[in-house]
Length: 200
Image (cartoon, rainbow, N blue to C red; front, side, top):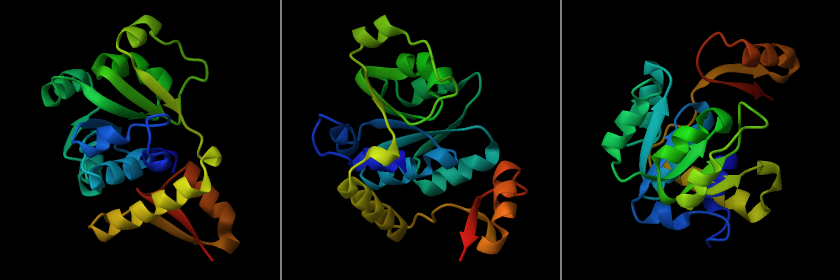
């Protein structure tokens, strides 16, 4: 939800990048489960979305969510992204900040932005001067702190994306509330793709 809220948190530049979505700039989104809302919302508002995936089955998931292009996260990632966006990308929605910051900085265009709500390394090193020279903005996002109106707007726009044809998240398991311990086990050790949903 953090990425969803970021897209609609504020309508001015003090917080975010709304202009980069509204004039068909490039957006790079991690198109796995953590990034599907961002893919759907960015595409719904008119941005060009380039998704990155770790496995072949995720490619169709990203495309179904609204990504225009999907590339695998492998050794050729940077070259493929440069081919798709030779002038660089405007925004990267990042869920592995520490691992990807150097590649992100390399791919961003002048004045680009990173919106991050997760990291593999809690104390990552950053390429400070490269970020300064490119005037890169970084937004660290904790969804608990977003104002109510941003969450309401994000929910409305998610509904809009669903109405426009996005199928939403794949449901892997539906578990009764009485069996909540089993639900936790499936989250930690999934037996099939998709989200685990508790049923009341």
